[in-house]
Length: 402
Image 1 (cartoon, rainbow, N blue to C red):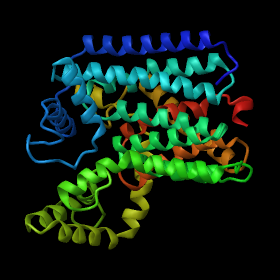
Image 2: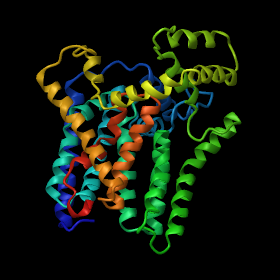
Image 3: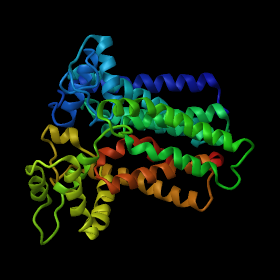
Image 4: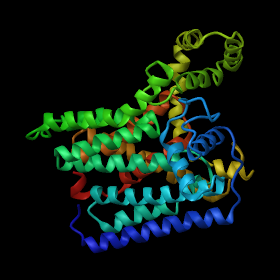
């Protein structure tokens, strides 16, 4: 993987894992956890039912499909093993996931930059980053998405550097599992396919490894899709959150000169219509206002995506939205946005052919991920799972990135 001594790489990896885990556990021990509510309450309920052997269900009997399955299932498995179902136990589980995610990021950095010192320093930045460390306090998906997204990006980089059938299978399966965490990553295998087909990348056997990659991606997702079809008699690849996202976007629409979208959405749901009729009305509302939903709103979402999230501080009543902040928050705002500038710069260079296919995939994935959330809902916490990608884009790539 690198020209460095394997013993040194292993030693640094162990230190990074221990440090990341220690920082997270110390944080959980010192600060009280925020109240479990909204999305977190649903994930906690699903995990507890999984742990109790009732399956993926909210009420203990009826199969659920609104939430993606992997995070609640893994947390439920943790609960089952440890015999606990508390938010504190979930925080410990999240700390372990984030520590493993830091280790995965270190491996990714080693394949991006030629310097062990730079790779270790970048991973150290993740290990002690307050935006990431504070996420372990919430029963939410960010640490899980970060871990599996980083692993999938890393195995994709390895595949593009040295294509082979086994590496193609691993990359496809990794993206399938990542999609079970959250469907936002579902585009990644097709981006990987596109990069693999770039001029100069079609080595011997390229058709075979592409087919294997897509097959393994589908195979990872198929069992859950089949489960959903058996229970709901309709095609739900991962989760049925589509109507929820549509309703969320309509209800948060604030268009000058019109009544709030929240009033329209409430009116639609008061009618007690079937799901299909509700969706038609909500989509009609969207399509009748293209300048807002496909113009200014996308731009606002893209900008909001680059804002550093302060959910934990807001939960403690420290810094509310729009309030004045200390100098270090101002400084961190600049650092956070600088990482996005690095991503955009590297992406332009990749499009111009200045970087290898493997390195180009990393930044193209980051920009595509950003674009997906610009189309749906922009929130700074949704950027945290690609923080290793942002940091990778800021590293000196050297000969490995060219």
